[in-house]
Image (cartoon, rainbow, N blue to C red; front, side, top):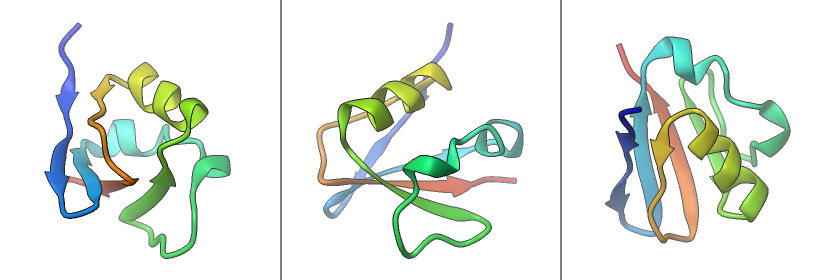
Length: 70
């Protein structure tokens, strides 16, 4: 299984997901500042496992910033 690689962007780990994967994000993990195309999540174990289950390879950071790609 190939992974979607997360990159460092300041304090965030930023990843751009295809719309089909972005729509599978679990909204119970979102924190304030989210929009229809950008979601923010804490880096707690549950959130990290959720991203990994979607094929994302997380990095060590303070927050996750998930962006919907084209």
